[in-house]
Length: 272
Image (cartoon, rainbow, N blue to C red; front, side):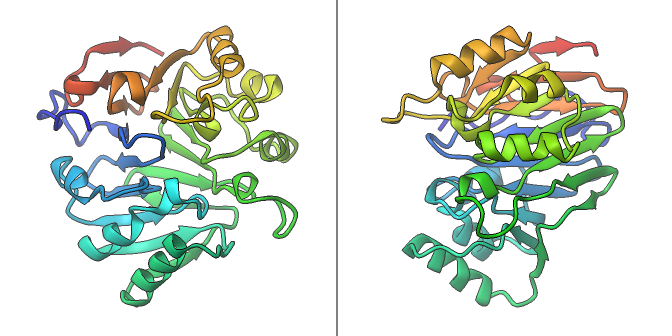
């Protein structure tokens, strides 16, 4: 993993900080709202507790498992055991793996955690609002295409967190009118070529795309996806190249991006 973050140079009470943790070929997205509220979307494949502690996490208000694949929930049982967690959300789809059974056991051991169904709703994380976008009906799609997808809003700043959504789910969200212009897009499915459509990118118009990816045998990120993101005008960051990538959004819609050893110090500045 990349070096531990340094102290931020911006007032943490004035920005929404979304950090894509460098956890290899896996997903873990840390959301730190102004005022200290914290959400974690996915938890990588392995133990991320020490990393979360280095980022100042002491409790988690919202824990989201986008879908029950090991590269998204492998570290979640450890997170549940290590931190107070208020709310837990997943897509309601069971899985047969030992990793999933460990997660269920961890939840059973913490009955104080409130389960939230991933139905369309708006959650609040202090001053930040998180829209849970509509899922495809149960039993009509595989785990990737029933990923919990979130639109994170802080004033005029918006971010789209996509899990491992593929073409079918992205098309469903388009048909539901759920795709809005955003500053930040987490590339669906680790930058796979089945994780984007031109229509989706034209609607989202992201200025920054972050690909959570590590060494893999799938060819992620795929050249077609990279070309599409670059053609959309977005600046592309990859955790395998850049390490941790942190986007700090302001109510005005402005944002800064830092990465690697510079996470916590502003190194790339954008005006909306």
